[in-house]
Length: 174
Picture (cartoon, rainbow, N blue to C red):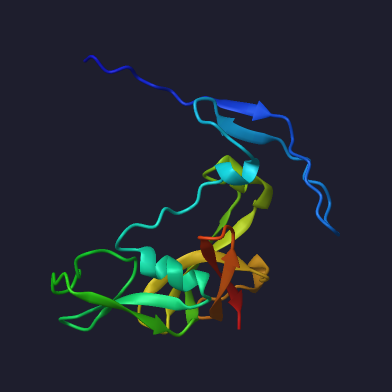
């Protein structure tokens, strides 16, 4: 009661033609929520927002390193970053550099993206990987055909800079 329900609507904006040296112009239309200002399609893409607990992880990716939390009490590695250890409930932790290799635990092919801005990439593969560090990480799998993916297949983490502050992880076959 007393609260106004806001329904997000999408608006198709004119395409933002962009042509860098050696690249084709991007002629795809830009879509944004009507109530949010938008400067470009790139600005409207959903990106992670690092928190106090996850900032070292994202900073590590920005540097091309996989930094994972290690509990200060029980010494177990955990991922995703969070303030409390799920094993011993300690709030003491540090971030340690870990190897970027792992083995595919599972994968899915996304034909219907959860967000408009991933539509141009569909279909794409998202892999759940058992990292050599002992945690599972999910990220896009690139450069491997769906028919060639095998459970247990070795992959390594790659790093894709998308802004000055954010680098996203992805996997490639070893």
